[in-house]
Length: 107
Image: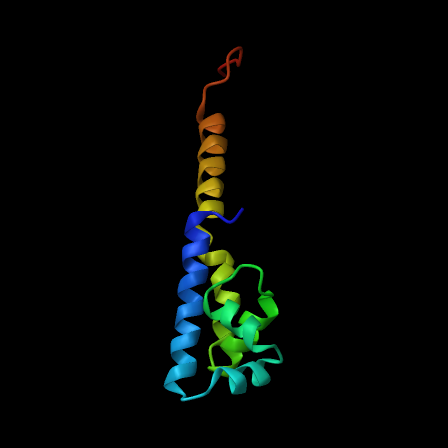
């Protein structure tokens, strides 16, 4: 089952790809041929169907000159969850080092 936010994002991508095709005045048949898929598959892609292969979405993005944006979607610098985890771990390490150790002799 796809999380609702992911399903919504995929629908938005499909809609945007349909708009891009329309702005280029290309028929579904022509666009499907360029993508290497059937018209029914193109219709599913433009609806944001999660069953459509990622390769077709990537090819559609390539057709509109936006495929270079794909790697940035998961760029490490934009991974807020991982960054927050790293900050929490660093704070824990710092707190352990700063805590006084019991039984330590003072000179």
